[in-house]
Length: 122
Ligand SMILES: [Zn+2]
Image (cartoon, rainbow, N blue to C red; front, side, top):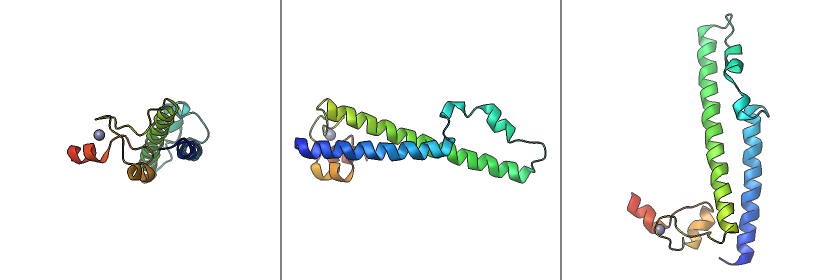
């Protein structure tokens, strides 16, 4: 991959990262995830809440945590991909060290393994 397409890709990753961060902020209400403390959760468990409402809240909250976790994982992956680009290690398979196919990277810029290794994993 030449330097021009690499820097394009880097830009793309950075803008995707921004979007993901905004998504994640929406979920946590702009707070740091860790400040969504137990008391905030317990505060919603008012005694007037019916058990149905409570169940609904728990499942909504679990969904949000799942999405938040997914976003975080994606952001971490983008970070490590950008780091690899900066260290000139991008497009190398993490398993065998061979170049990852260009087609594959175009479809999945954060791909960690080459097609061969993925095939072997299955
Ligand atoms: Zn490989």
